[in-house]
Image (cartoon, rainbow, N blue to C red; front, side):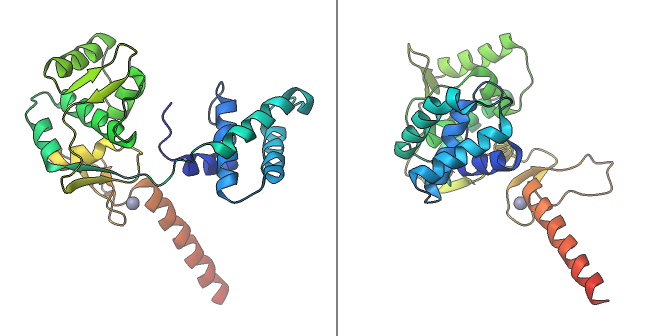
Length: 245
Ligand SMILES: [Zn+2]
């Protein structure tokens, strides 16, 4: 599981509860870090976490959970809270990707590059399923491995004995051509860059989006977030108007 923005993640948890079934202690750690980030003190964070557990864990028993919560809050206080990260991709890097012919290889090596930069140029672990989910490629496991092997043999990527990956063509200094601030569907930024049909920029925030099918009369203009904001704004406007009339 890769969480690109823990603030966003914690805010979703507060609205909707746990986002996984089997990683809830990990999730509680993120939530606790969020409350420290919001300047709550140890006791306040602890009580927030307990309230959250009472609400979302079935048959929650504080005696059972007391140790876990204490440890989680203790670790969260010292942990790094990841939010607002930005990844820049340079022309030099895009030129290297351009030398590849297979669009699937291009997308995978782009995603690996973004991850490597997201992790501050440190070798990182990524589950193959996550990698292909982020690349938005639905292919069989044999092909998945073949693509990675091909990229390795071209000396664009590599993997350590312990299974950590990195890319060999990153460029730290070049001027950014693609800037990624929102990591939802970030591979679309690459599709937009290469000019894949039907990809465009959100008219508000310029994030890359996938348009509707050609037959649809209702052209998509905004990313999901801006579309939601827009709906909210319109609703408020209608409310105000109906109040005045
Ligand atoms: Zn937008």
